[in-house]
Amino acid sequence: MSRVATFLRQLPLSPDEIASKSRLSTDRIRAFLDGDEDPTLADLRALSRGLRVPLRSFASDSAAKSDLGMLFRQTVASRPDRGVEAAAGFVEAALKLLPPRDTPPQWLSQFRFEQETYEEAERLANEFRQMLLPGQLDEPLTELPRLIVGMGAILGRLETSRFEGASVVADGYPFVFVSPRFAGRMLFTLAHEIGHLITHHKNSNRSVTFDLAGQIGGLNRHRTQAEHFVNAFASVLLLPAHGVGMFLQQVRGTLGITNPAIGDIEILYLSRFYGVSFDVAARRCEDLQLLPSGGAKSLADHLRVYFGGPEKRAEALRLPQRAPVHIPRVSKNLLSVAAEKVEQGEVSIGWVTDRLNCSINDIYGARISGEGRRGPHH
Image 1: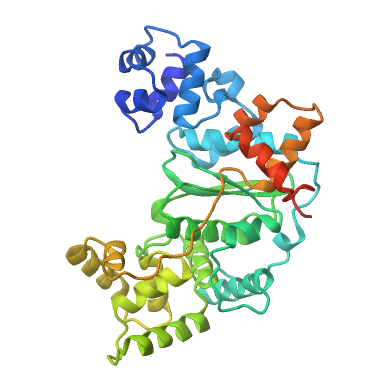
Image 2 (image 1 turned 90 degrees about the vertical axis):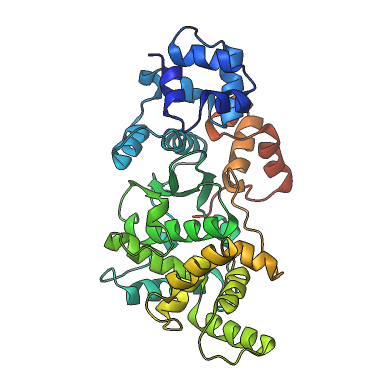
């Protein structure tokens, strides 16, 4: 079976869906899958554009292998995933564009913890928030993507993957990948992966973690200790205890709520203000003992049964919209370096757009804006 057929069969898409995305005929897609025809270069470009994958994804197995690719595949230790392959190619390309670095950014190695306990996660999150927003310890962190890029992390998208997020340290550079989802979900995934960076990657020159949806946030408590730890870190980082208490008090006063028990409406307001999902906000309230044990799940189940879900309930109540969370396909600190390399003739624009899965406009837009022209901070 050809590399193209193997790749297409791994996708969670039907032949009709692949055809629709690539604008090729279903008959032609079936011919590729059955090995009856080999795709032309034009076909491969159409598949690359429609499926949002680098052209190199269709290269032969021998060409697709690299040290980073092997590390990524060994990390997931399960069936092939095109998002994993694309992320490996992204990091490999980034390291060719970025200046060599011996050590990660200083902030990545300064955090210390004794054990993976809730108390330690809380302490680390508060220290990290103080670093990000000194003097604004109760404010929402919906600008987390911009702030973490400003500290030298490189962001990317984990397109069409069964994994929700990934964190990587490679040759001194920290990377975070987030799958495109609902904004509140993406923000928590980003915070979760940052937790991995500062706790589980800092002592390694090359290390990778991929997380499935069930390992990040939500109400399920059946996870490894490491995932519990970074979930707690993310929850505290995005929902600071003092800020949560003050905001709930203000909402209850404004709405004239006198019932001593915290209800779904207050938590919906809380989730919108801090930019997270209802489940994450409710679980944080439970951790702060503002809800009884199991109360978060009970409220979430109630909203899904009677209102079709928390977001539909919030829309029906006409609650304020949450602030947008922009996690770019490629962060500007890398795009600006790529633009410089192209202008200097060191790499072609086609090589960059294929390896980083971005557009020409992305590259020159970053260059024109002037953001991050000197590359990631040390």
